[in-house]
Image (tube, rainbow, N blue to C red; front, side, top):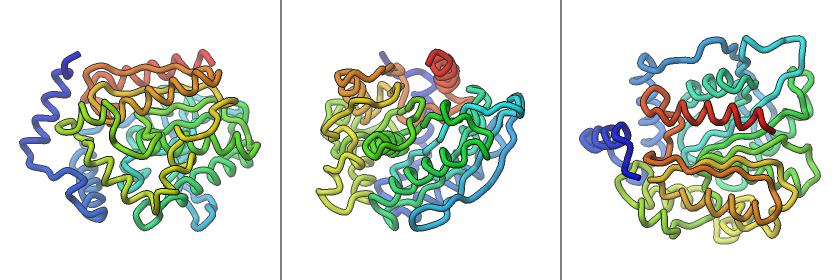
Length: 313
C-alpha cells in the first residue's frame, strides 16, 4: 500500500519545517521539543469529553511515581470498573503523562475503561531496569489497591506503545514468571521487543518516516547499560525462553515503521506458544499514528477497533 495521503502531507510538513530528528538532539533538547510541541498544539487538540481526571503518586522502587487516573463519567460508580494500565512510549527517553494526556482521555472515553497512566523514570538518567521496575511495581500496586480505586481486578489489562509496548510486554512476562496477578490482556502497539535495528522493516523504513532506523539505535543506546541488558528478556521480550501462559494479546503495527517486524515476530512467537493473539498491521501509516487523533483517520479507527476487541475477550 502507498502512504496514506494525509500521512504523506504530514511527513512533507515535518520535512519542510527543518526539524532535527531526535537522534541528532540531546535528551534534554528532545524533551524541550516534546513540551514545545504540546504547547503549540494544545489549543488545536480535541480533548475527549466525559472523563474525570485524578492526579496522584504511587510508590516505586526508587522514587514516587506520578500517575493520572482517567475515569469515563458515564461509568457506573457503584460497580467495580474495567481498567487499562497505560505505559507511554518515546524511546524510554522522551514524553510523559502530560504529553500523552489527549490520548489517555480518548482511550478511557472510547473503551469505557478507567485508564491509569504511569509516568516511569526516563533514560539515560535511569537506564534499564529502572523504567521496567517502575512499571512492574506500579502494576502490582494497582492490583493491590484495585478495589480501593474502584477497579475490577479480573478486568485489568495493560497497553503500551513503542517503548511503552516493550515495557508492557516485559511487565506481562515478569508477572507470569513471578506468579503475580494475571492481566486480563495485553495490548502492544508497534512494540520494540528486541534489541537491534536489522529486521527487514528496519531497513525498508530506515529514513523518512519520522521514526528512523538511526532513532532506534539512539534510543536503545540510552536505555541499555550493556550487552547483557540487551539480551535480558525483560529488556528484549522476544528473547524470553518461553512465551506460554501469557494473557490474550493484541498487537498492532504500522506499515511504514522500522518496528513493524518486531510486532509481527512477537505475534508469531506468542501464537506458536499457544497464546490467543490478534495481529493487525495498519496500512499506509507510520510509527506514532495512534496519537494523531484528528489528523490521521487510522487513529480513530484504532480506538474503535480496540473497543470492539476488548468487548470480545
